[in-house]
Length: 424
Image (cartoon, rainbow, N blue to C red; front, side, top):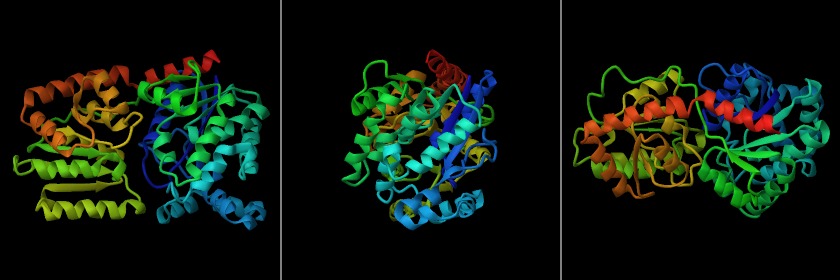
């Protein structure tokens, strides 16, 4: 099959959706499919070599943002558009602005979801025509539901089916201020008739989005996330001291404050335990990170905590291999949680909240322990029990690693994806 996969970039930090898309495209190519990965808004940030190389960004975020805010920018000459779409310019803008702030981009999100009927219709139509000019594909794949506004233009112009992955859109849309939140969900649902199939990353999220979008059975299926685990492995030596780890965006929604409180409670009972925090961050995350650092300092624990931001792939693997256990106690309904299978690929067991996609992945791999969501004391107890039981901890890590290497591989994800696409 000839597939065009559209995915938004972040410009300056890793995100789970970008990592998943990169692994998916590479695995589809390995299966013999002709796949083009097209970055939107900002350049892609991935582990290792991106599947798209240094592909030109289509519908650059600066241009789209400025034309959304100021009508005069719609009349700029094309050469100025191209300057603002240069990778270096887009990365610089991403470094200096919170371009992914839900509150600031409420109106922009609604217009994107409205597609042909929104203020960005000209930009999206130009993108669709560019896709056709590059060679009509068999299928167009959208990385997430926030791009579903493209589906009507793709179907009407190119006459090809559209697959749309769902990767946690509710956690973004539900933070939009009104009236944008209601308008965005309404616009999202209006695109259902043009999307041939929605692909959810977990059974939990399939059920959640089937309800939120008003979909019929068969209009949405589960294609679980997977990864290419080359480069991941079990550490040659176990950590010298018990170490609790974290690997996700350093923000409130991922439950970092809950983990910090659990550590504050656990630390007096286990004077040797350490906390290793790693993940992505943006300028907007600075105040939250500072608040957590202050909380640890007040508890006299600052010296027992390490921080690593925006890790490279090698640094990420080294971070995971230094851990006794990983916990990312997300406070919202996480659609999947790539960090769980990354930790298990290194033989590191996990302690996660018993809800949403996280519980599903932990149960499917058998590589961890579940505890009450949002409860720092319950998390502390679960972490302590696992840290004091090395045989159980090792068994969970071994079982989880065996499961992810087979059931959560990039090849398995690509085969499941291709089966849905071929069926259309």
